[in-house]
Image (cartoon, rainbow, N blue to C red; front, side, top):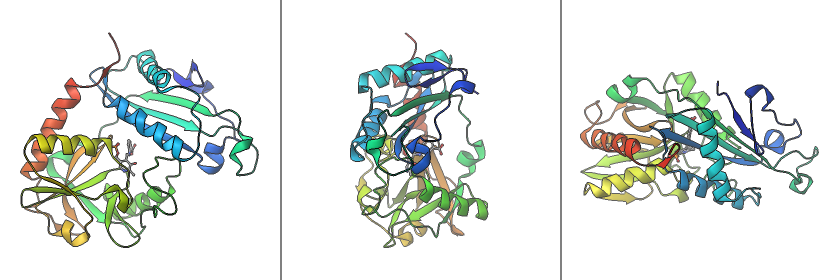
Length: 292
Ligand code: PXG
């Protein structure tokens, strides 16, 4: 449990960090969030996370009552107040308390909170042996209904898919678009490796523009591995040489089985391994310092 939570400008103990039952973040999922990690006393890709937060807020006409610079300072202050070097930061902005109707104009004061907690890591076997995943029956939200590029508090689409993975006893699940293209996983982006090239779906299929995915593509290009961003179907996943997932929580995680089909040799492949290693190096040396 963290010692202090940032809530609307104050750092308060967790038992005092409470929001109203009239908050539209709670009543309607009307709000946006980010999940950010700190490694070795530095916030990894903080500016990119803040950029995505402000873009998501703008897309739903949500006013964030802090400038990006003030928000950045608040995130740093919260990590520092909890004396963390390796941390998971959850930054949430909701429409704020209103009445029992959808109308966002009834919410004069947005709610901002930041939780900085110690990180709970995935088991080492996930990375050493690779993950088994399934394809979920729940399709990813159609961009025309609710664009998955908006990191909103409406995560029921992902939670319904997550329930399927729990039922199947696997840690993650692939989500397809309504028309059957591979979109992403419940909380990660997906990549396949085929004939020495890396392939990932465009966000237009219906996925979040992942910050870890961006780093993985940067590293791949530096290594001279071609990266293609194109729509593909499950067959491309089943027949891939390698599959891996990227996300702030999972980092870069190799996949070795999809719907009972072995991927490649059934072990994490060389490109996934190389990306994982270079990603770890970056997380240890890059980022916005929390302590100076
Ligand atoms: N797709 C979805 C739907 C996500 O929610 C990603 C992709 C990966 O994006 P980033 O920017 O993190 O590379 C996410 C992010 C958690 C957790 O606790 C989930 C995410 C981030 C942090 C923590 O499960 N999802």
